[in-house]
Length: 325
Image (cartoon, rainbow, N blue to C red; front, side, top):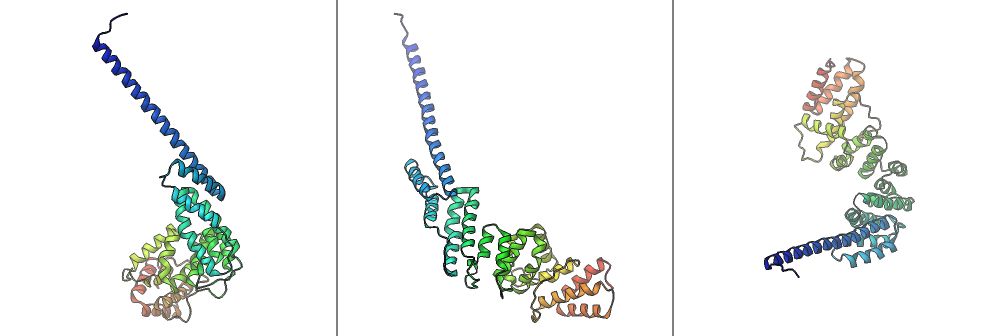
């Protein structure tokens, strides 16, 4: 038996110990990775079950996830979705009941889906909105619960064409701000900004306080560019005034004289300055095509009487276009 010096023995023992510790760390990491993989598999299976609307499957997998990872942050969101699937019924008899379902979808269910499903949340939520739209199609429009109408549900489901058809069933509510907003979004979804200009300008002239929310929802680059230029040109208007946007349609005709805005409802009896300015601008665009004439002078005089600054803006544009005569 050969003799091993004590210092070599200690060195060998240290090497063996270090190797053992390294192996234990690798093994622990592998075990942690295995446990983590099980959690990931459960989460993926839960997402699939929610998207398949399998309430029983969601309940079973949720119990497994709770046992596997009791502190996982997705537990509450998946729990809310499990409850939503078990409670879900699109059948309602009254607009008020439908409105409560709409509020629930827009709040609790939407938040839980966004948290638990990520990018797949829209697929799940839209399927619920579509079912609700079909279920409440026979309910009439209720101005006190406007979001209960199936046109709105179709919009939330991402079906603009179906929303347009649903809006056609609403009678005697042409100037209802909610109906106008739905019409704007539906037409925009089908054919873009130019298709929804008429209801947009009707909304601007009759209920301009709703313009900011509508503009945010549309997110149309050309419209937003015009909106910014409008405020730059009409610096005398106060952006904090919720009615100031009502001047946008008259400015738009000054900026885009070739625009054709058939179907804009201004309320011919309205004496509001912005409504009068818009009506005069429409008349001016017609008269300008016929050249210099007494009616053109009279219309320009009327625009100056309504608002001198807007008239000056109009004339500056016409002078730059060689139409100052």
